[in-house]
Length: 458
Ligand SMILES: Nc1ncnc2c1ncn2[C@@H]1O[C@H](COP(=O)(O)OP(=O)(O)OP(=O)(O)O)[C@@H](O)[C@H]1O
Image (cartoon, rainbow, N blue to C red; front, side):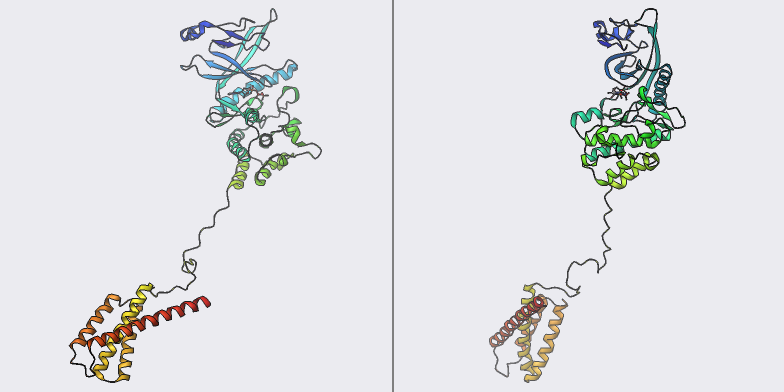
C-alpha cells in the first residue's frame, strides 16, 4: 500500500509498504514512518493519506482513508501549510482561520447536506528536518466529495450554457442563504470551491476564509484570504463583508463559467464594471440578475441569496397561460351558423320524405276528389293535409316509416271505396301518385339547390 507523506518539504513523499496490503496488518499496525524524512505517516494512528489533491492558500489537501471504519472510508485530510513569507501576526491569523474552517464545518457541515462534514481536527508535533527542532502541523479531516470541482469541469468540457449556470445558481444559493442565516460569510466563492458530486449534487467547499458577519478582522494580501478577481471591492480593501460579498463572487464564478475567460479579461477597469455579456449567450433577464450581483457598491446588489433565487424564479417561469374563456354559448363558436334547434336531415331523408309526401299527396288528392268530386276543395284539403305532413316531418314527429304507414292506410281506403265514379283504376291512381311523388322530389331538390346558391351568395 502506498502512503503519502504530508510534510511539505519531503523530497520523496510516496512510500510503499507491501505489508499494508494485508488488511489484518493494516488494521493492527501502530505506525509507519516516511522513508525520506521520518514523518509519521498514519495520522493520529488512523488516517492514511494516499495522494495529494491540491495545494491551496493555507495548505494542502490529501485524499485519505480512515482505517477505523469498516469500509476504510475515503476522506479528505487538509493540512495547514502557510507560506513561509508570512509575518508572525499573519501566521497567527492564518492559523486562526484554519481552526475557523474546522469550527464552521463542525457547525454547518453536519447541518447541511451540501457542505462536507467534519470528521476530525487535530495537531501533530513532530521532529523537524532541522536538528533539535520540532514542527507543528494542523490537520482537518472532512468528508470526501467524489466528483469534480467546477474549474475542472470548465477545463474539461468548456463553457457552461445559460441553463447550466442557472442550475448552478439554484443549487448553490440555498447553501449561501443557509450560511448567511448562520451569521457567516464564505468569502472565497470561486469555481474550484464548488464541487459536483458524481450524483449531481453541488457542494460548497473551503470554509477557511469564512468570517462571522459581526467580527471586524480584516486580512488581505499575502495570506491569500480572498481570490483575486472574485472578491468585490469591499473585501479587497479589507472592509466589512456582507452576504452580497458572496453574491458578487458567485456572479463572477457564473460569468467565468459562461465565458470561459479569466476575471481580468472581463472586468472593465476603466469603467469599473463587468463587461461579459458579449462573450456569452444568456437570456437578458438572467444577465440582468448577474449584473446586479456584480455591482461595485454592496448595497446596490441583491441583499440576500433568497432575493436572487426569487429573481431567477421570476425570470425563468414562463408567463401564465391565460385560462380558456368560460364555455358559454356565446364564447364557444363551434360554427358560424346561428344556433338552431331545427333538426338536420340527410339528403336521403329529404329525398325520401319529399317523394313519399308527394306520393301520399297524389293518393290523397285522388281519394278526396273521388269522394267530393270538387277540384277546388280537393286542392285545398290536399294542400292542407300535405302542409301538416311536411311540418310534422320537419319536427321529426313523423319519419319515413310513418309516411309508409300513412300511404298504406290511404291505399287501403282507396281499395275499400266503392267503384270510382270517375272511372279511375287502381293502376292509374298509383301512376298519378307516383307522378306527384316524383314532382315533390324534383321540387325539393330544386328548392335545396336554390337555398344553397342563395347561402353562397349571401
Ligand atoms: N471535501 C473534498 N472532497 C473532494 N475534494 C476536495 C475536498 N476539499 C478539497 N478538495 C479538492 O482538493 C483540492 C485542494 O483544495 P484546497 O481547498 O486545499 O485548495 P483550493 O480550493 O484549490 O485553493 P484555495 O485554498 O486557494 O481556495 C481542490 O482540487 C479541491 O477540489
